Image 1: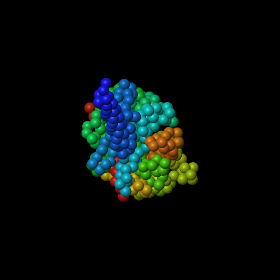
Image 2: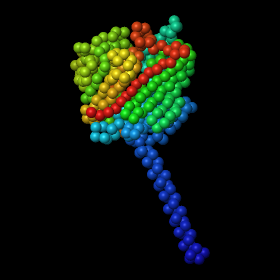
Image 3: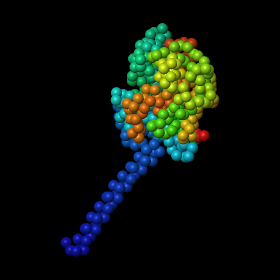
Image 4: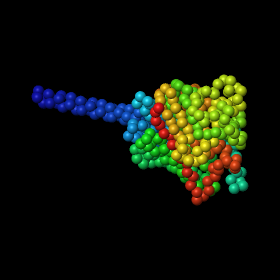
Length: 395
């Protein structure tokens, strides 16, 4: 080989090495850009798996204002909601995990973070329902009651997913007759839509081939500060309600509907969530003690009109405001009383007591056993429809 040939070979080898290195660098850069392209910083690859022979993924919804919502079809869970604060900085305002492994591990990291709950949100007394004269026993999982559809409710099942467009995700659950002992083959559809006015619009539909009960909700834990190191006690809450349903020491509704006026449960005017959650009240007020804070259903005065404001939540530090609308008769306000530092969420933050608040639109708890309350019965030929809007703005 002469000198010119040797120089050609060395130059070619160097060129191919540089091209290879550049290709690797470009691929790595593209992957990093993909990971960091979302305001939440979530890595979609950490949600890409198979559970119960069904594909699980993370879906990103976006609007023209830069708002983003991330949802996994495992349990129909809202993983993140990123909204601008009063200074235009993006804040992730819901609790959750940054990987599917923690969501799916009901032993070491049990949670209902962000879930599309079914078949029956909230509690059913001692797991007993009576349908068409037949008593049905459901598996119990909470102080002797059935909570959120039982130990393998829909929050631990995989919805079929269709990303309709950049701002709409359609999730479908085909629940077989006998799922958690509930009767009927039920087809349920949850549609998440991120609107142009920074609202997460959630629509639920369901049909059945046997008489059954349906009561769906979303179980997002909101922390409008965008930092779950902070509690929600300084956030302010308004509820369009003047009555609520008391509970016993097992968190079960007593069957009463009582006025909130003159009680610790009056949010008919905006007030700080933590104003009444004091050591003295937790000790001396029966309802505050029974719930270990707020874990109660408020009877909404909106009468099913989802154009009326049902609730408002405001954070003083970020200026973020959540306005809720629903056609449901009730809302469960839960102030994260069972968060005890046992699980670590996004950004390595340990979730402690009262670092999130849930606003769960619903029929009242244990409605199947309280026929005088709004019915959760769904018959063949009927369609269950429920609607909830979480709209975000600043003040």
